[in-house]
Image (cartoon, rainbow, N blue to C red):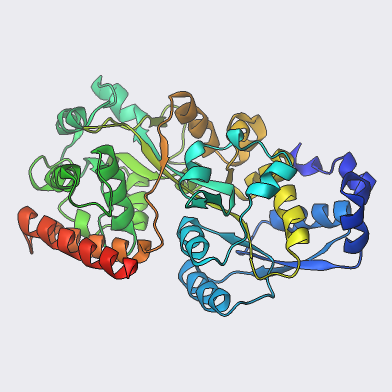
Length: 415
């Protein structure tokens, strides 16, 4: 049981660890940086670690995402030593890893026999590593899931679409005044960037490679869903995650492609979340693949820490299945694939059940194309694509602008 996670290791304490490390750890402590936890599960993680190792943990609560990026960038660039283990996202991992601010974890993984095969491969090769070195152990998981109104499809005698083409065909049959096939959050400010990444990836492109013809195909298809096919509202360029989520729960959309964290809000709405009313489908296949995007937060070690040995014990501890599953108490999905089929995890973090279905469908869960210059790439892509979506620029002008912009960014980085 998650609530009874304390194992025999807690009773045995330091006897479970290498003796010379334990003896020096009794009176020592570490500082970990983690975001706020309203449910209290993270304190359970800390208490379990201290009970097992004798190492005290000071928890520094992270500010908002943007503030955390700015804070860590400033601190680590100056060689900040007063934080040992840091909970960071994909962007910070690539940026900080490339800058040399994170401790490589490959040796730690070998020493503790951590079996990374229990994680989706993309999470540790594509967004937790840089230039062949592992800088982070994925902890939580965020994956794009396709939820749909099963009751509407059943009433109309329609099967869920399996391709982009079917998305249009079925969408025209299901859409009506005040109700649309799909909600498209295409507003600038991070939302649109994630949307672009999903659709360009399925077309074989990438958000930082506008030379690829799949990018033009994807954003043209996306815009035509509201301008030509009318299966999404004209307001799409002004919609964000909040408005689409609210619209989906207010019977406005038949399909919503969302981050799995929204599933908790859906289930908490008793009017909306009813048996047979809402379900999850596999992503419709684009021109090249049917992949869905995934991202992760995870644990890294500050390369400037004077207590990297103790921080390694922390990272190993939180990577264990029985510890990682505690995240479900806060509605969070653990990064380990084996936990997605755990009945208690599925009850507490409802999207895990659907991630297990996605996992069985094959290797369709893929990371976003993250680079150390990701923020610049994202901002440039959002700005360019949004001018196209709002009619300020045509497709040809938009693609040329984005090619030129990405060339400038990459050339500046290389210098």
